Amino acid sequence: MALAQPAPTDTELDAWCLRWLGSGVSETLFTTAHLSAVVGVRLKDDREVVVKVRPPAARLAVCTAVQQALWHSGFPCPRPLLGPVPFGAHAATAEVLVPGGDLLALDGVAQYAALLARLVRQAPRPQTADMFAPHPPWTAWDHTLGRTWPPADDRDADLNALPDTAWLDEVGERVRRRLRRGPAGPTVVGHGDWGAHNLRWRDGQPWAVHDWDSVISAPEPVLVGLAAACWPTGVVLRPATLDESAAFVEAYQQAADCRWSAEQVQAAWAASLWIDAFNAKKLALDGVAWLSPEEADRRLALAGA
Image 1 (tube, rainbow, N blue to C red):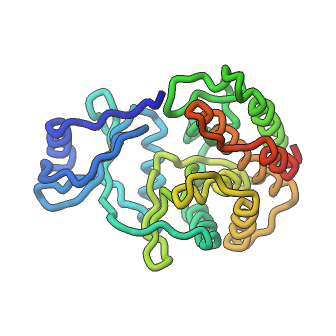
Image 2: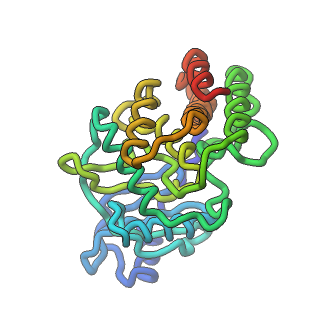
Image 3: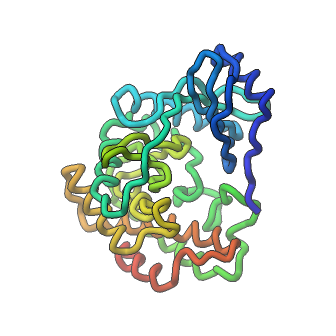
């Protein structure tokens, strides 16, 4: 069962904005709620801002700091205004509303990959290996919880106790063993949910990258492999195909002006399979087939796992 974050009431939102942003709410522009409640508002002083409310977590402050640094460097992301600060029992941030923008078609793989390479280049260097811990579970192949799957982000079910998809448990363990083996290179900071649904474009140029709660740190090929699995999602309701993942990994290396070793490319394939397998375990609860055994076998082979 999905665990939606309830949207704040108008009264709560108005009081919070008055206290923390110095102006009450004139108009609510939109409201969405899933893992976070996200509300776009026009304040009485005519500013348009987005308020995001979710459970408190230490990593939120670090994610916001990365977003702030990227905005100052000229990267296309909303400017953070505040946070995280308390919102009742929750934590909230505020950022400037960046409206509009379009989804980019899948023939723009080089642009998707180049924008991620730009993010990695402009992001601050990670100060410690665990500065973003705990990572979102769909990226947390290196969790230390003792079983294959970390707790799901949006439901109560234990993914380790689902007999109908037990074949995915072996896939997950093989991926984890391959990624522990390395080598994958130095750790960088990037975005752990590099799907089309979080990216907006204008006339083929990047307009805004959203969802900065998904900042992670990982070896660069691992980060790219995660993105290579999910980058089309939002334009299409499926993961990347094998060819689409391969095209992304290749386009990223070209954009970053680097050439990875065979072991690093294998690490990217392993990371792509982690996110696919995690999502497949979770979406099976909804009757959605996200990953076939045949696709998993092909990615395992490419990962050297």
